[in-house]
Length: 147
Ligand SMILES: [Zn+2]
Image (tube, rainbow, N blue to C red; front, side, top):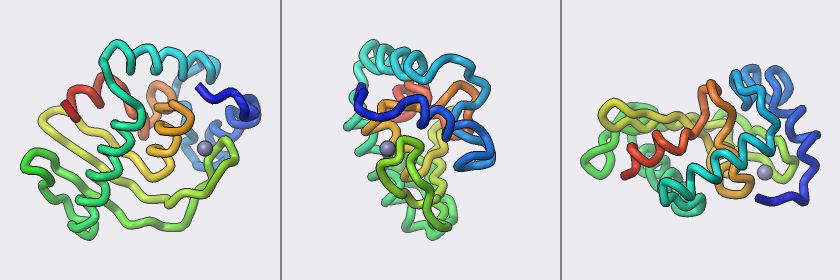
């Protein structure tokens, strides 16, 4: 985990109504460092790699964008709907601006929703978002979905 950021400031920006109306924490009341540590542990236990997962999500988003906002089947098994970007959103850690897009990926019973910012948060900050956040990238769901 990267510690050279002001975690307290990032945590404040993750609350509802600061950068986005729903925020990034969902119903999670744990400290940010605990959320990240727990998900890093789950990634290890599930043999997932943050960079590899981020790469997969980027690839699925890029392929899904060919549907121009309509759901399309990608790689014969994923139903992907990629909505175009509407403006930009800063990372809560203050290290960049990301497209405010929304990509949904579904396979069987599992589905996830994410944005360019979600991928960045996952790759760089190892932050999957809090429990109950609509954009949470739950490691268990990622494992089942991506195989
Ligand atoms: Zn960042």
